[in-house]
Length: 116
Image 1: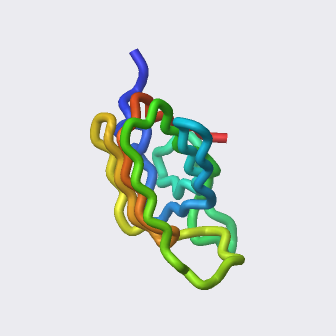
Image 2 (image 1 turned 60 degrees about the vertical axis):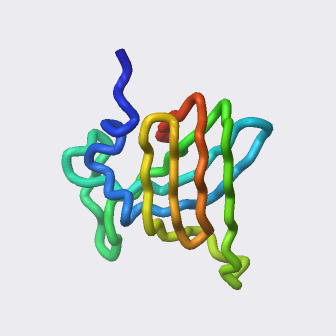
């Protein structure tokens, strides 16, 4: 049996992680992320000099979306590439996130956590 969604965030500091991109295709939504890993995570490496933490690229992929609400914020800086996360919640098939990019609320048949 596979890992639960919640267990895939063990040793991941979501509050320090960032959103890099939001990609929408048909009934699928992909969030490109830079996950901030904590000691104890299998991919954790000690941060180098001048680094704020151990960041690892990854994605959240939602398929079979039945409800979707995207409320994009006007951030004024079009060149921004990373967006801080304010709140993050996955409960069963529901997902909610508020961040500098905006608010994302959805319900999906499949929620996958992918790391590069």
